[in-house]
Length: 379
Image 1 (tube, one colour):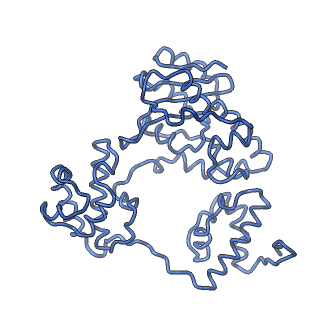
Image 2 (cartoon, helix red, strand yellow; image 1 turned 90 degrees about the vertical axis):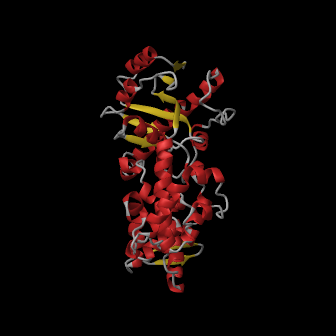
């Protein structure tokens, strides 16, 4: 099938006419994010059973005709590992398509493993080895070679076949409705909205700070996030995480005192010094009752730890019966949350349906397990 390379408004209009009757489309994107806060869209790949096209957003000013196709109410958009692609669509449209299908999530409930990569899934399902020669391509560069375009097209060429195959398997196994909640989360705007107030939670090492220092770190995080958004720069280009931690820990009260913070360059002090001091003062002014608190769960007792071990064994047995990788259903932390009677992914959706209910029954004394030769038996 000939790959169409669309780099003009006229070509885009013609492509949209070809896609007009589609009820589903396989979608992928190429983007660059190393030097910006927001991803820079560099290529859009789209396919159905009859068309494969690569659309050049660097050459076309108005992508709205294609977005109108994507956002039709009767359209299902098919992705593999959809979040980053959907983030780009959200930035373009300030809205999200409401019908999505993620082949990575579908593969999870069909026993192909947790967070399986596109290439591995194509190999397992279609017995095709994808070319990796252009994996490090800078997609901002033009012109793109025919080999690069063909490489990019592979991301939707086989995605449409995966969609047909995995959807059929979901129907055959009665699991077609298991992923409704997961797909709905992918289409929720709050999934992609930045929240400067909580940006400090992404700073590694924050758990080592005192609550009073966390109040300062939170204000510094708000300032850095807003600055990064305004300038469209990576957070680390504003102030690095380890410097943020030391600023919160030592809370310098003057520009001279900032010179003692390791890793804080003179140019950073010149550019951001006053704003940093203002954020530190705002953090110090936060009332104690409003200080952020890192939730550190109490260690499990020996008996609780043994109970988690038993539940992990039951999890593995139930997943083996369903031909699903246990890690795709629940981690040990998820099981620990269940033992603590806290919220856990295993209490919701398909995970609760196939495993969570059984684990809750075991905890309630309504289900027993025993050993029979070399396997567990459920009673």
